[in-house]
Length: 210
Image (cartoon, rainbow, N blue to C red; front, side, top):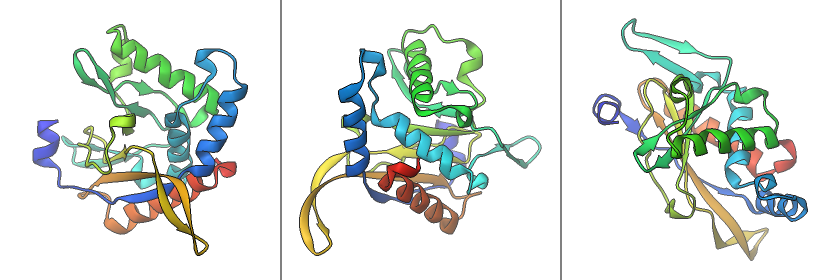
């Protein structure tokens, strides 16, 4: 992480997302789900929206080979999931996340995160990610600039979801809002970063298209 912070000129593009409909969908699903593991957190939905967005912004699903000084663009999405463990931060990887439906994605995120927390994860699941998503859940704060998981060029920081008064069609309404951020300024320019986050925002605010 120190190497990433020293070598990479981080920047954050931050956007607020109205996830009211998404949260209603999640709550509806969980109200009908049976069993603890059948219930979904927001993270699988956010991850799926990210995966859908990367289809249109493949330059963000890229790693940098420092020795050869080349960028490697990946068709597969090997999703790193930043996970706090008793031994510190680890980033277990969901392989071929682009192939998974929401329930399977949720189960695999849960599996690799739990294995990392229990110090039982296989070594091959602790490397090879192409992009990382990081969330502190209720501790997420309003905004953050997560440190890149090298050699990736993109990381998405998920901040806390909170109910806030917003103006909707000229009226004040309580909406569930969340902020997203962050990129590597060497390889992802500001326009592409903004366009990607705006597309992810569109998907999250219209969950029927996820």
